[in-house]
Each structure stands twice: as C-alpha cells, then as structure tokens.
Image 1 (cartoon, one colour):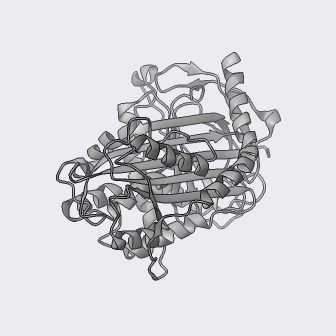
Image 2 (cartoon, one colour):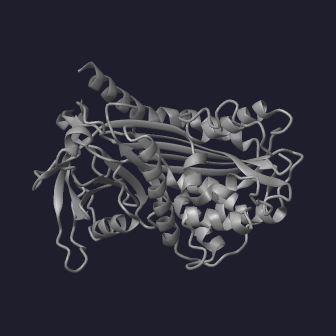
Image 3 (cartoon, helix red, strand yellow):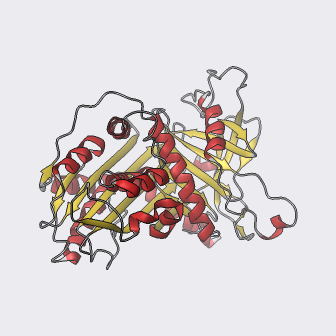
Amino acid sequence: MRQRSTIRRRVRAWLAAAAAVAVGATACTAASAAQPPASQGRASQVPAVSARPFGAADTAFGLGVLSAWCRSQPGSNIVFSPASLATGLGLAYLGARGRTAAAMAGALRLPVTAGPPLAAGLHARSAALGGLDRPGVTVAASNRIWADPSLPPLRSYLNAAATGYGAGLWRVPLRSDPERARRLINASIACDTRSHIPDLPAPGSVNKDGWVLTDALYLDAGWATPFERALTRPGMFTTASGGLATPEFMHGGEYAYATAGGWTAVSLPYRGGKLAMTALLPPAATGRASAKIVEHCQVPSAATLSEVTGDLAGHDPGPAHGASQGANPPGIPARLTGIALPEVNLSSHQQMNGLLAGLGMGIAFAPGADFTGLSPQAGSISLVEHAATLAVGEKGTVGTAATAVGIMPSSLSIAPRHEIVFNRPYLMLVTDTATGEPLFLARVANPAAP
C-alpha cells in the first residue's frame, strides 16, 4: 500500500511540477541565449518533401533498439526517445563517409537509396518537430555541435547540420579541460530538458573526444480528455518476471483501438490532435511459459506496428473521451474501448555503444571509422549515451530525452463497450500523428518500479 501511494504521489508531483519547472526554465533559456553558438552553418534551400519516410525510419530503428535493449535487460522498464537518439546519431552520420556511412544508414534505417533527398527529408523532419507546440502541448528540441577550439569542423559539415537539424557550433575545452567541457554540455542539456536530465554525459565519459554531438527533447502534453482522479484505483499487474505489483490504474474514456498480429493498440490523443500515445498490449503468453515469464521481450515488427497504427489512423478522435467520429477507412468499422492504464514514472540512462554495434553500426566505433566529412582529423565514435524520463498520469505526459555522441580525433468516462486492461508488460509509443515521428518509446515491465 505504501509503495503504490508513493508511486502515485511521485507521478502526480512530477506532472504538477511541470509548470513550475517551466518558469525556472525561462531564466535558463535566457542564460543560454546569452551564449550563442560560436559558428552557424548556412542552411541550404531545400524542396518541400514529406517527413513521413523519416518518421517510419526512426520508428523501425527504435523498434530494433528496444528489442536489443530488452533482450539484455528483460525484467527492466525501458524508456528512450527514438527521435533524440536518431538525431544525435544523424549528426554523426552527416560526417560519415564510405563503409561507415553505409553501416550507419543501414542501422538507422535511413531512406537514402529511395525517397526524398536526405537534406530535404531531415529538414522536413526537424520542421515538423518544431511545429508540434500548441495550447496544452509543449515540445522543444535542441541540437548542438560541441568542438574543441583546436578542432574546427569543416564548413561543409556545419552547413549540412544547419540544413538538416538547425544545429550550431559551440567551442568547449574538450581536449585541455574535459571535465569543464562536460559541465558546460550538461548545463545546456539540463536547461533544455527543464532540469530533468542534469548529468549526460556521465562523469569520466568525456576524456578523449574532439567533438560531442547532442540532442535534447522536452515534452509536456495534456490529454485531450484527462482521466478522472476519482476513477483511479489500485489494480493487479503481472510483471515481466512473473511477480505481482499493485500500481494505480487510471480508468476511463472511449478510445479507438485496433488489433494486428496478436497485438492490441489503443490510441490516446493529446490536446490539439497532433500528438498521440499508442499503448500496445502484446499477445498473451500461453501454456507453462506464462507461469514463469509472462513476456519474453515481445516487440512488434515494423510491418505489424504500421498495420495496427494504420488502422487507428482511420479514426478521428473527437475532443471528448477520445471518441471516434467516423472517418474510418473503407471496411474498417469504428471500434471503441475503455482503458485501464497504470500511472508510471520511468527513467533510463544507458550507454548505447554495444547495442548499436549489435544493430550493424560496429564500424562506427572501430579504429577504421571514417568521419572525415566532419573533419579530416575525426576518428571513431567513442560514446553514445542516452537518457530519458517519462511520467504518465491523469492529466497528461511529461517526457524528456537527451543523446550525446562523442567522436575522437583520429590521432586518438462514458461507459465503454469493454475495457482493455494493461495488466502485464506493454509498450507505449508517443508519435507525431502527421509524420509518424516517434518521440518516445517505452516498455513497462513493472509500473511500480522506476
């Protein structure tokens, strides 16, 4: 009883504190503005293209990361931002050449052989993320290039980074005083994430690098229809290890849902309709296996996820209760459900080098890596560090994420028809409804654990 009360208070306190934190962030942002980038590339004029191929690429990449991460930590909660991780690595990719570039493009699932031109697609993706702000929803992203004064990036690289990501250059003493450089980078990330992520990169991780590429993402989004507090009550949850937890479950609404490949997906829209969370319940384990381990790191394929979210996209959530208003694709009837969803407060901090190498990006970490598009002196990636937080409560969602990529120098409540209960490990995916860009992806193995 004491544990679930603590979890509930923690989630509510975090969500309630978002407004207060935002006030403090104003001063933080103003302080950052007093230190403009030392250099800014010249953004090229690019044709208007759809960002959806890049949203699909980041989703497929995120599913691959989640699957690998879950296999290594099958009993743990996981949260990360595919969008942030893809941006940090994307900044590195702009400097990659030859086999290194090919390996990174494959691991990131970038549509470089078909689809829109890379620069135009990345620009469209960044513009779409920048356009998600609206009343009741705050989305803020920042991309930065940090370089030692003795190792200036090529002007062509800065131009590409400005075009695709709006990133500028900051000079910090990475070689002469790496700890001071780390503190300066962390101050920027803490500012951009409203103090939720204060220590990325971690102590001791910046000691060989000539360049550090960072992305930070902040989300504070209210539900289109908040859950009613009076309906929140404890419930039983079977954890990934087969144990039992008793988190607080939020109940309510009529929401569009769809099924594919044994997965059940429920769409929970945020205010303004441009963002939505898709809660994904995997196929239930059966037989003897279900008595010990309920979920063996089940992650849908990109095709299955596309099918089930495509069905949901045919529903037009209205302003009340997430109800569908018609607008269904031919042959797909409107299907509405109530939902019982645990309150959660998740956080992760992960070194990603091994996971990314396992996804096919190993050459980028090896001595033969080619990042000469960044600088003739650029060697291999030394670190990819990622941190994220996600609090889901009755009023909405607060999420933050940050990625740091270090590169060494080469010398170095309406009664529903039925209710879907998320009472066993499940996934949560927060996406831009227009582009499909995955802002956050999480696996809840035990909602009573951080």
